[in-house]
Length: 411
Ligand SMILES: [Zn+2]
Image (cartoon, rainbow, N blue to C red; front, side, top):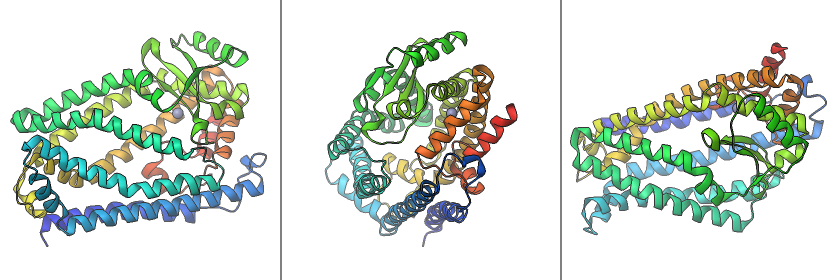
């Protein structure tokens, strides 16, 4: 076997292996003993249920990843890329359309492969634990809307990238970086108005004590925003969450309807204060800048792989092309993307602590924040004792027990 191909196969297997080890360690870490902190929150049955949920979702995740990784490996080793390239070239539609057909077919195949897993996860697994609220109609509509968005936004963007690399030579990665960043920034502004309403309904929070409290707090913090909204998260799941979207004066706080139903007002205010902390401590802008820098570095690395004869020989390709370079680069990029993911998670966890601290400092109510976190964990059947390696690898939020400890230290 070609050496480079062996390296690529090793990369894919290693990626799967690392995740598998983290999951196994995490399952072994399940503790029968309920931490005393959660005594009044988790009853015996609910706590056991949360552990069953963790076991089932983890095992199903391993199965999903295993099947998908195996499918990729079989496709690679069977010379699938050369075969597909031959097929799309037979249409004789020029480089650009050929490239779009090549990438589009791979995308369609991966979507089809993940569909049964998504159906099982939504309608069997999540339903078994009382989380699923998605109707088959919503499920299908989500897929159709997602595909339309991908075709309308992703298609032209991909065509533009292929065109840049075809026509602008050594400067192509800079052109790609500039245009992708511009589009991303436009989307950041447009998403709350154009894209998110396609999937959910946003309603201004009804007048009352909660809205007064949130608006009062925002004024006190000199925080300009468009308002507080609730989102019909219950359309898909019983799980709850909260987040911020938009920029400048058009910023809005969004609370899932499920969150508003389950939490008392002081906890909701503490959660809002935490979200606001992400803005006040500049986490959002830092994440955006990090994203822009990563995009640039990625396009630069991609430019080094364009039409590389060694890479194309590894996949037994007859013709060199931009479109296949994109895909092959993706395999080589796997370790970089994993490393970036780990660094991103480390930063994100640090930011969570900072946002918690901000909430306690400004709203002056650590009791409500802790109660809010506990309720959120119990309602979502969260894991109280994740393995440190799993946390390090892909937890965007610190384990809830660590957060509570850190909040208590603030006094
Ligand atoms: Zn947060």
